[in-house]
Length: 269
Figure (tube, rainbow, N blue to C red):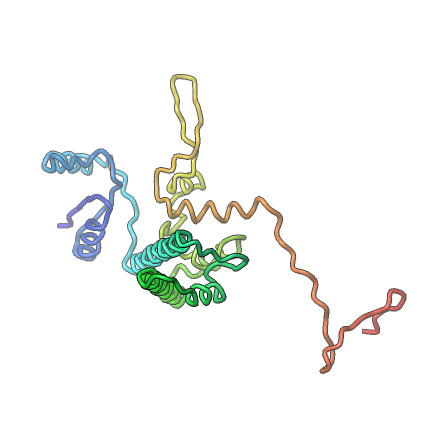
């Protein structure tokens, strides 16, 4: 006889759902609500069983095994990027304390890195600290690049490849941004309407109602901040008109001469 099981969506519940798939068990993921009383687990279990039997629990869709792999890879890359940013801040703070500031140089490019490596300090301890900070930043950068290459190689093999290519057609959305959105949101069709989709990352206005009075406030920001960041950053690019590349001169022949036509004559071609 099939068994119906409900559990709280999370790292532990996701593993249970993947192990029970195909074993004559209907597993339903539930959002974190007030139905879960961690102080009294037995009482909470009885309450959940009654609500599940009455059909009053709304299940949510959990990721499958392939989707979970991509999600873990994206999370690892985000953590590596945060660690890289932290390491660079440590290097900048150390140089600022020593009075060594690089002017007129784009940060963390090849020229900037060469300047940082060529700097010498009077005290040996300061030199050791500088070399250690630069080495840690270099290791974090290599980790970010390595995870980025894995994501780029894995995208064409997954089902989310068409959605990723469609999102990249939008301004301000690159490969990593599109993959992060699809890995964290999943199938956008499950939301039904754009309002529900925007409510998932907390990009809907808050409301305080009392009787016939309704007051709207700022966004709720009640969900995943990473998804909200990936959606807000591309939206900011639409405030400005798109940039137009300068017109390039056409070349003809093997000698690469510019084809110019006088104003009063027509091009014979």
